[in-house]
Image (cartoon, rainbow, N blue to C red; front, top):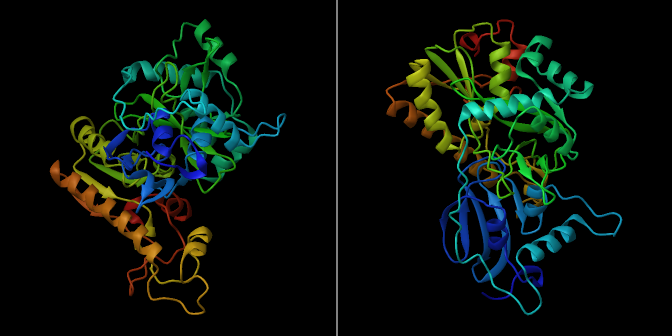
Length: 419
């Protein structure tokens, strides 16, 4: 298969298979996969392009990028081996070589076959039992509590939804206490069995607080971790244990927060955002659906279907963030790393349109169109909710991005009155 980047014996496709990435489409050189960060089916892992080895990961849903080492480091929660003077990438390389059983004269690439092995999901009712038992073993620290208060949640809301802190430490003792009470964490997202035979939790060495994901039926089906000190802008990661012993993928589910019966639902891009909107909103007759991302169509449609059948919704409000209406003019202000890579970064003039902004806007616009199509498919009324928009240019003023922030600063805490 040729010579790889970093003079390596494996490529990024080998690593993607080791990590259990769900493959949507594949060929000899690159795969379209489900993003392990945002759940979008628009991530790409590619080891060769135009005859050149690149070994890169790129998600067109959330913008996350990486290489064959960094995606492994992030997925496995690897830290630097300070004692032995090894970087996180070096530790990752050693683990990958061991798992692939490679030596200098022993290279048998696995990337030419796509694994179809799946782990059977446990029912949502069982997920609910295990996840609630897990929360009972944890506490919420002062830093995370104050963060949630600033976001508009009350003490009652925080207690009611069971927000808890994860310290990024080994969770073996937590799992032992759960098991002593008859709780079986096997094949529940985030839990897995170590080589020593103990169950633990895959926090990826991240510190932050757990965001509860509630299904349309009202079950606690999983968590996102809101990271305290995010790297590369990745604020949220799923509590997942895909491709680990007795572990399973989170599946990137949508979260519903609202009454059991509602005629209208506001769809926002973010699980925590939907929960906050529900708690702040004075009108408790409407619901809020939090999606893992505007490009995560595979989970949005079944959620809308359930809301129509179970909750009885008749109207879908598109309440995605206002950056869909960003003015694409180039101001060298998009993102530092993207501006650095742009051919026009050192120009003294500003272009009429920023190619990076245009790509982002198209992705967001496509997400809105897809939501509209889903609503139409189920015979539901659809409308786009707008705020902080210039009446003349019809572009976002860039003051308030999300519906949760807009509700927080509004005198009337009801999205019907927001403009």
